[in-house]
Image 1 (tube, one colour):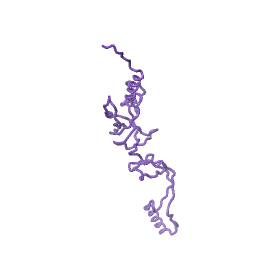
Image 2 (tube, one colour):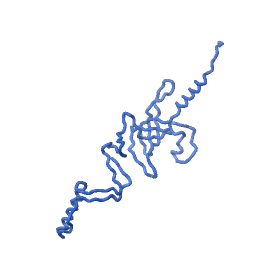
Image 3 (spheres, one colour):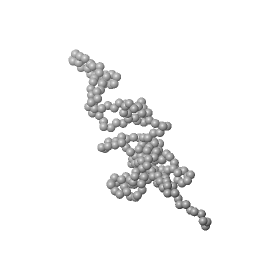
Image 4 (cartoon, one colour):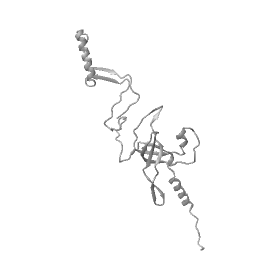
Length: 212
């Protein structure tokens, strides 16, 4: 043993190393890709970045399983999207263990003390990269199906006006003309003028809309 002086570690270096270690094990938000869609409104997700294990060792994140995915809903109504494998998503990692909530929806103490853990992710589907983004019009509110832009239709609503003519319902208008002709053959002049179109309004409609 020599008489050299042993210098204690610098406090700033120790705190910096501790901070880096904490952040390395804390999960907040990640970009993921859907691998499997389950029937119980959960998905399996592969995180789209790699992580440093130790030193220069790089590895994939483990597959995230049983991740609930967000559905826009309220009051029992909801929008059903055809989520499929390959869809990108945001994964939000909860502050605490969500197992008890997910299983029972009861307010309980978390079953363990994990925080920001990979086991507690929730998926928000719909994020896009610069490589594959949506064709957003920005002028109208549009709900597009898998057929994409150009296939959308205007939705009819209660009290919207409607027009029936030979262009929209040729069979109905032909029936009207035939019935009028038959009545006039029995009672001449009973129906003097047959309108070329009929105006009306929509009185009722469906509460659900499917867009192809």
